[in-house]
Image (cartoon, rainbow, N blue to C red):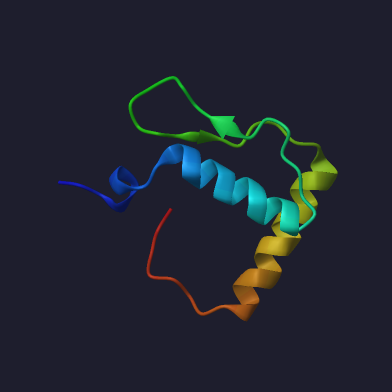
Length: 73
């Protein structure tokens, strides 16, 4: 059974995520493709605690402004 993640190019997804984070003023230096397997995973990498807090705050703010999605991570 194919899932939505099977149809999305991991490189394009990585670049889209990087661009969105940049627009939010957030940089994840280790963001990149995880070449360790066939699943097309994206490695978010390690971040400083202040960056993690800013990312969480941005996600919370965005979540409050948007309707609940029907997807599960």
